[in-house]
Image 1 (cartoon, one colour):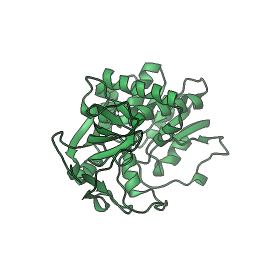
Image 2: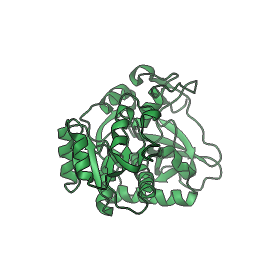
Image 3: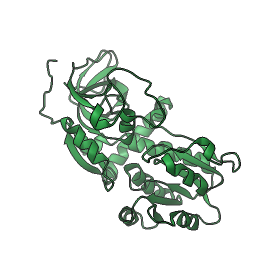
Image 4: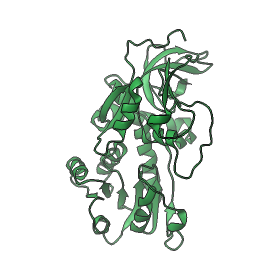
Length: 340
């Protein structure tokens, strides 16, 4: 079977390589999924390239990806569902940039009828991230109405946050990088302020929209050098919720006025979702399935590339004006490495 691997961290297009490896076998309680579609998430590339100042803690060959959709190929002992031939979405399924992946049966989520393969591939990580972010926001606001400032509002998760804010009457201020990006977000949610950080006075615009109460919470997936600006925009006692690192540069913790202004930094990672109880996870998955069925337009696809064309897909992911998620695909008729 085909697998994209890397053995050291570095520029993704340089350290990743396509290999032929042996197909895994599901053990007790596990299923083997023949993957058809996988998204390229920012976190996948961070795993490959690392973060500034953080050494690589692992060794040996690794395969990126934690989410995807496909068809159950076979099941291990004691597995009653899902069954072979059933469409499923998987998360967390480490190593999804591969033709096959083995996951625990309870992490292979049935794809609802009518949901396309492409939407199914995006059905879990982003909606589950949305739920985790909203829980963090509710905890930080302590019953208040906001306002909440979010970076990268034109991103896939940013669009989900904006849509949820509109439904729940949350005061949201959106940040994007460009004027054209601001126009796109504004067209989707005209009632929400949208500010382009390419404007020299973007900080003043944020303060104007935040009003006397000021920004109570920042949802930030940009990080880097922008963190200090975001901390300065928070009202005293506010909360910064970082959940990504799309930006460049770094900001040291000592540079933030945490003590003097009683600020809180509360990091959020989707990989922490597994710490929820099985019942809570089931409710979250049901929400994600319903969202994929009811509003598939929120799961925008930028482009699709065959798994072998991963370098072109990674380069597309980095385009500044990209809208939607880039997908890696395997044809349904492909039989890569069937006997390997």
